[in-house]
Image 1 (tube, rainbow, N blue to C red):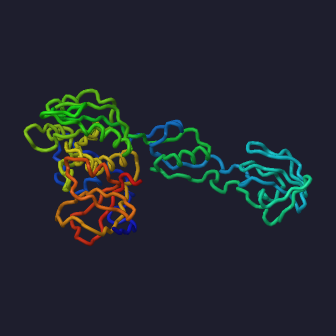
Image 2: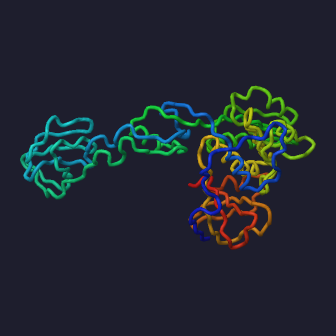
Length: 410
């Protein structure tokens, strides 16, 4: 199995303002949209209002505006190695030692040296730092090649005061939070993680044990709760109900949710209640021309929470979450729509299916990415082994590159 991964293909980051407003209540919306259109419509949600939070609470949020450095980093010339800070030419008479967090009280005179730890401020007058391995010390005299006395982190060599260090829309990863702290910030203006209320429907579902008879073990709740966190949301509550109870759960207290996610009841069967509920909220789209995950919908957002209807089949719910929830969360937090790299896969590939986008699990192996064929919308066997989803667009032909939606790259 060989593959090449060589840059973005059809999808590009959005640079236009988030301009989507949900249709007015009762508006028909769009039906059976393409997979790319569904992502774009979901991503067009207006961002949530920003708020200022302490640095320790900002993990996973998104910057609401560009972040400027309040101080240089490093804030002073600092030693980049353990060794000796030396002034003038050798031999150097050692006059003391300096640890990180300490400052030498006076300029260093020519012909003297200070033993110095990595990160300690370089004494004024020092020409640089001579590493231990480049120095020799006999009776308090340090000798070595003065040309090797460098190893200094210059003031502002990483970040300068007033410099933009992160753009608006940047995800606050651990590294980003560390950078913000190094630049002097105690709190940040962020767009918060969307609060999500989950409603799992189906009177046949049971939450414990192996089930039996007509009962089916609920795989959706343990799938969706961590997946929502992975996609950038924060679960505010979870409810399980039958289809008839769905409207009541929609109307009751939703724990201040920005998004309500439902599973099942998305088609037009005799027990499906969600389409009527979505029409009253204002449908953005209902049905996406993809497999698995066709019966998904997006509604609301104008005068209340967004409503995302995911299919009741577990793998279809998984792919629909990446189709609609992921770009919706990106839009709500002001992040760009993710760019999908293209990839050329060798080996068995699906046959053409004009008009439909197919999402096929991919697993990384020692030989490269490998398609996991035969995935069913109802089962999670291959989904549990996948690291990405191969996106075969409606015009894809065997031998063409497909796009790659990265979900859990090891």
